[in-house]
Amino acid sequence: MPRPIIDPEECSGCGICVDACPEGVLELVDDVAEPVNEDDCTGCATCMEECPMGAIVEIEED
Ligand code: SF4
Ligand code: SF4
Image (cartoon, rainbow, N blue to C red; front, side, top):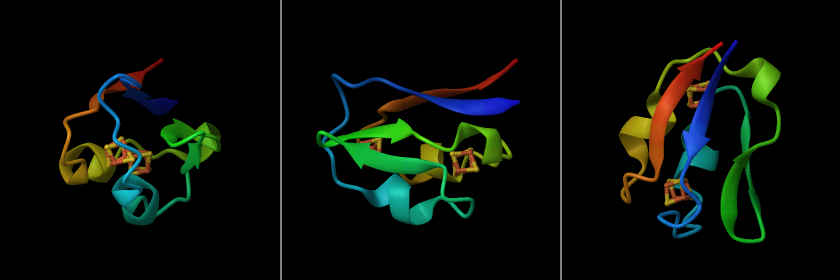
């Protein structure tokens, strides 16, 4: 399954990726984006494209 890898040091907690993900994979936890429903990730990379901080470093495929 694909899943986004997020660098917590770079994440500003803006929430753009949370709103952009069409599958509801991401949520803010303590002001850092985390994939809380990663089984639903389709690997579309929208979150990575929308993140203004470059904090979503890759879409990992298992
Ligand atoms: S869009 Fe980027 S900076 Fe904003 S919450 Fe998501 S990972 Fe963090
Ligand atoms: S790759 Fe697509 S489905 Fe997966 S977390 Fe990012 S926006 Fe959501």
